[in-house]
Image (cartoon, rainbow, N blue to C red):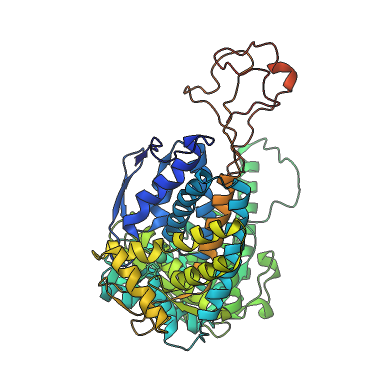
Length: 570
Ligand code: ADP
Ligand code: MG
């Protein structure tokens, strides 16, 4: 999606250049319509022309092509948040836009940016208290956990699919006692969402582990019952010939002898595996091609280049110990599982280890019609999983649908009325800004945002603190509606939004990089900007020049007197 920020009407502050506040507002404006259960989809088209249809804030944000450096700073901050929390990307983006907008108004009224930033920061701490007060604990067996997962994935699929995914996600999480290391998610193209399933076992990707399953053929019904499993944490190659160093071959007989030697070494290796009745040899690295074929012929299933986490999981699940070389395999190192079988999935295959006697493991096998849908499904399920884990790990949950933000708004507004300095203005602005969540949910549901806000305030006043904007646009009790989110989600959204807005507000101007020889900075003619924060991509400070270079007015076109103490480009 081509995305160039229109900054002409974003900021009217005379002191602050437009391009500082515009991008934040523009990003918010782009994401606004995707918020909540009635969020609309965006079609994101990247430069290569591939198309993704999504209403996941994080995916849209990834797809935006943002020219303005400040826009990139904002995006990176929000993306870091999304990776950490797993939900609330759109909410954070809307909050950033709203806080920047409000700051603009405050600056016009003469408030210094530092006071605004301080005011916002103090508002966040009151917000956290208000959210904690609103939150209720949830334990892993609570049915609320399912509601947390479904709230997080609402709007991505139809109601039935949402329900189903929330169920498999939460069931899997419970089955592993909320231990993320024992739960893996696989997504494959081909098949529909409804073909997704939860597997009590470990799946090994045949494609990514490039396992030869010749021995298995393509018959899905073939399964190894109670196979002995060995794990080797190294490459499996025939041992080098004993006379180490270079072997000089003088005639064809010598060559034959070398080959014979290698074959014998290979044979010994195969025999040492087969003699120990190993049925499945799981290797973390590659297995020599000839050895692989011989193993398969000897009835051993070779599984090579197994992902590290899966390799470790198999060891724990089978009660086996990984060894450094095939020669180290002994009885104690071997383990077993109930069954190992091949399964066709989409165009490829996976190997499934099930009936695990040791540590149990759950795998979610997700399906989507195309690779994009499969990847998006995986992302959404991961988000649901992340928030369910947050909720179950003791933080508690708050009602969704904007109820949390209403509580925050009330608390911060109360605080504002009790302080008598200028920071009250920033607190008031913050209290208004956070209502962007219920307002937007109402608007996206086709309801009037102001009416919704008034109704929410009245309900709160009557003690209904869980009142929020429902899918229908009406105001109702969110606990009754099953719309709940971990307290960490709104809390982190606010923290990230304030930190990001602060980052932008503390910048007082962007500095065009001045090339010392007067030529353009970038090949594509763009000028670099100095932006007051590391955007995580190392855009900061491409070149640093001593101030001496910039004296004497040699830098053509810039027209800045005296020169900067540095010049930046990216
Ligand atoms: P984000 O990227 O911020 O997570 P979403 O599009 O997921 O954006 O929308 C999240 C918002 O939608 C939250 O405020 C959440 O409480 C609200 N929400 C989710 N499901 C429902 C629902 N069924 N009814 C009302 N609000 C909901
Ligand atoms: Mg969400």
